[in-house]
Length: 235
Image 1 (cartoon, one colour):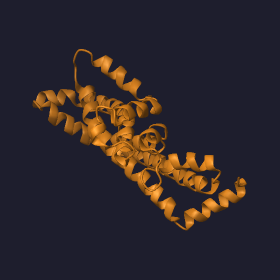
Image 2 (cartoon, one colour):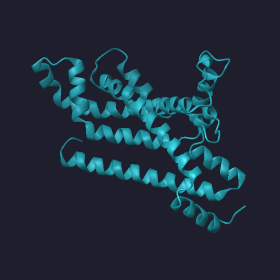
Image 3 (cartoon, rainbow, N blue to C red):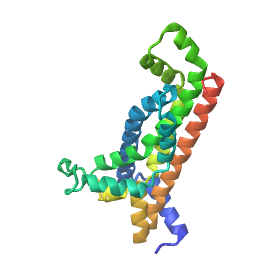
Image 4 (cartoon, rainbow, N blue to C red):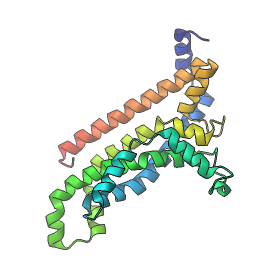
């Protein structure tokens, strides 16, 4: 077991030296999280906009369900995906278990409801402002959805960043479907858990420093985008 000071010094050295293992783990973490955010935005943004603009029976139930799914327990999502993707599961023939693809799917499942629910709130506010104009011009629903998504792009970027922050810090689901395999599916959060259990606090702390830096950068980005949106009256 290393003392905290020694572990912190080793962590800083690894970060400054761009340690090979460290870079590999960070690279995979970013690839998995960014891919999951892209999928979540492709599904969640149009869905959230459609719910925001639609007036259909059961709409309130859909909104309640979206809000509830924002708090999906990661380990439960990981367990369900494990059952689906295991060799005995209905999707076992795809051979995705313990691959980065399975980790991307797990993160996408977790953050898509977040993206959809938050974008629904953004688009609903914009729709209240533009609905009469859309009706008077006879604009179709798909074109109105695209127009509102573009007009709310600054606020929606903060939604995407919030989803990325949630994805990159996720550990429960990805360790179940990814397996934390060295040089294949080891990401920052799972590596921190493993190295801490092994007593290798240097690598764990180095990864923790990078993870906190990413979280701070994402939050700074969200704040900057909100200020920009407010300045140009797009928020």
